[in-house]
Image 1 (tube, rainbow, N blue to C red):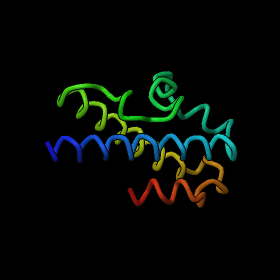
Image 2 (cartoon, one colour):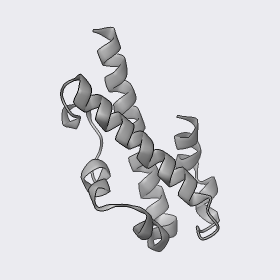
Image 3 (tube, rainbow, N blue to C red):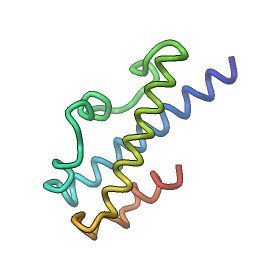
Length: 100
């Protein structure tokens, strides 16, 4: 039971942290960000990530968390490419996302 709660909390934490980082990026580099996100990101990060919206069941939750992790890595790698705007690299939300 505790393991399931821990996974759920981490899934919610990482997803919500990425969502907030994307919102911050949109305020400081909207045109660049539009070319980085995929259509399904709106479904995952278009509204707050809450436990009652996460997939049910162990395998579905694990797939979701892995997908969010891949999206995080894509965002963090993308913001450090040469074509990315330099100002958003030091945004607080991105620093938090890197730490998590």
